[in-house]
Length: 226
Image (cartoon, rainbow, N blue to C red):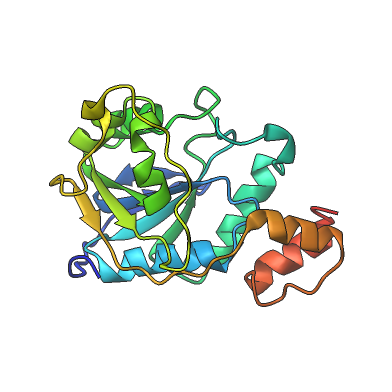
């Protein structure tokens, strides 16, 4: 765990289109392509929402991750709809399309600048895995992120061998694990590969326990990943 839960009333209100027009409180941002969103994502998001002081966790759908092949991406609207379906029964989890109208490929630093400008009343934290933390020095404007936001890090599973980490050009680029804005959270881990899921769907395998039922039905009804 990392911290104790606090609840703040009146986090946001939505207009007739379901778009957030006012945001307050402590919001955790969990970025991903969610291609598709699976139970591993949901377990982490739910843990952060209920075992930290965050009021909400937003699963931010990234249209174009600069580190991933865009040809492997399902359309952003499908991915967003799957996230909405997956979190529809959890009042502390929300799907977000904030990056849809921002320049692509999407860089977290640019997204955070945008969010700070349009929601100055909110306190945003960034949720990442230990593998991404180890590569934080390769991110665009990574020190800007760390200095302006708390970063909640969930550790890799002990059985996972760490992947090679790029050597920084300057050792000063590496964010210390003990930095005051870095908070380590002992979140439960379910190791599920989105690539495995896409391949399994294409091969018509049974994956009913790896996806939320609503997501599985949406994929089937729309013939996604086939």
